[in-house]
Every structure is written in C-alpha cells, then in structure tokens.
Image 1 (spheres, one colour):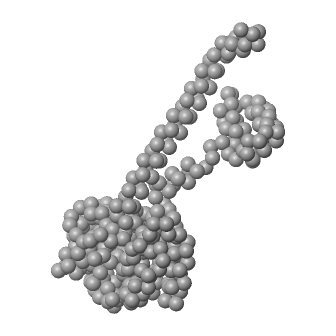
Image 2 (cartoon, rainbow, N blue to C red):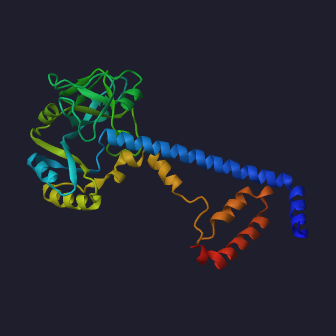
Amino acid sequence: MSPLNKVLWRDLWHLRGQVVAAALVVACGVMAQVSMRSAYISLEYAQANYYNDYRFADVFAHLSARRKVLADEIRALPGVAQVRTRVVAEVTLDVPGLLEPASGRLVAIPERQKPVVNDLYLRRGRYIEASHPDEVLVSEVFCTGQQTGCGRQARRDTQWPLARTDGGRHCAVAEYIYEVGQGMIFPDNKRFGVLWMGREGLAAAFNMQGAFNDVSLTLSHGAEQAEVIARLDQLLLRYGGLSAYGRADQLSNRFSPTSWARSKFRRPIFGDLSGGSGVPHLHRAVAPGGDAAHADRVAQGFRLFQSECGPALS
C-alpha cells in the first residue's frame, strides 16, 4: 500500500463519524427519491388506466347550439376516432340547509347506458331510466359536501323545477375530478356540483332538440392533436365555436394530483448545470453547522469546474 493510500485511510478513520453521517444522508435521499418516484409512476399508471377504461376525450370544444349534422362533419375530420356531442347547461340548485341557492352544471347522457366518450363510473345506485326523464346522477363529491343530505331540485330559472334527485345515485367521471363552476378558482363542493341527465329531457328543457353545444372526441392512433384541433377550430369558426383544446389543457386533468406530481418531478434536483446554482445551494443546505463561508468556497470551486469541464460534460 502506498503512503498516500495509508494517509487516506487514516484520515477516513479519523473522520469516520462524518463519513457515515454523509453516507446516511445520501442513502436517505436516494430512498426518498426512489419511493416518491415509485408512487408517482403508480399514480400515472392508474390515471392512464382510468382514462383508457372510461374513454376520456383527447380534444374538447364548446359552441353555440348547432344541429347534429355538424357532428357528421366532425367525424369526417382526419385523425378523429370517436365523437360525442351533448348538451351542457348551467342551472340553479335548491339544496336544503343553504341560505342561498347553489349552482350546478347539467350534462346530457344517453337514456340507456352504453359506452361513450367521457363515460361515467357509477359509485352508488343505478343508471337513469328512460321512462323517468327527470332523473339525474349526481357527482359523489357534491353529495359528500352536503351535510344535510343530497336531495335537491335543479332549476333552469326561479320559476319551475327541471329535475329532482334523492341523492341515491352517485357517480364520478374523469372530466370532473376537479369541479369548479363559472367564475370559480377553487372547488366549493357545497355550492357547486355536476349532475348528469338524460339527453332528451335536458334538450327539451332548453329547446335544443336535435342540437348540441358541447363536443368531445378521441383521436385515432398516430393522429397529431395539433392538426386535429386546427381543423376543428376551422370547422367550428363559422358556428360560433370557442377554441378547441387538448387533454393537457382540460381543467380537471391539469389540476389532478398526477399532473401536480409530474410538474414537481420534472424540476431538476441539482439545477441546471449551465446556470451554476444547483449543487452550491444543495451543499449550502446540508453544510454542517451552516458554514456559509465554506459553502461559498465550494460554490466557487463548482463554478470553476463548470467553466473548465462544462462543455465536455454537455
């Protein structure tokens, strides 16, 4: 063994406490990173399966009421696999226990259950019956937010009831995991909820028989979302349609826990090597005793290392 190696092992033996402590810190960091990454991958996998099983749409658009003939033109667009047109309306809800009326969103669904884009997951109760056009399904989070029960009336205005529910049928849908109404920033499950009603009954209540004001579609394999959105916008422009948007910009998907986790995991832990700020800050955070002068010297050495070796590393 050379004299330098002997000196190295002797110094390591004298600093064995600090070395073991540093190794434990690194091990804990690696363990935390691996566990969080594994949890994130599990969440992402579960979200992808949920979206696939219930046919969560790839593109969404809203427009003024138009006839179903427009739906055939949308289906004919290149890259479009499935299209779902529906009626969506804002209503007032009479909720027992609230001093002021709550607001809600009624979404049209088929009278008979069948696989559709943005399909529902029934958490409790049964599907609506075609023989009862005033039956609705209620989002589970809205019923959970009501401490006095879930029985209510939905009103188009203050004159007459549109639909009733006894709160016995709860459902969830990927499109409304994050439920916010018009003018709302954060969810208020006591004063806003989403309800699903048969298409014929909802369309008749709003004089939209044979028409729709909301469209969502899935893309065929290999289709470019940007191209499909551009063609859809061009088609809907003459019908008063708002700009179509993709799944990444859909409100509920953007605020889902998986999206938050994705944004955090994409942040580099050690910073940008070209910026020279990642490792010095990390070292400053774990420097024993908070020795700022020692941390600054390490930062200077790291910047010198970048200036000399940065091009080779990149």
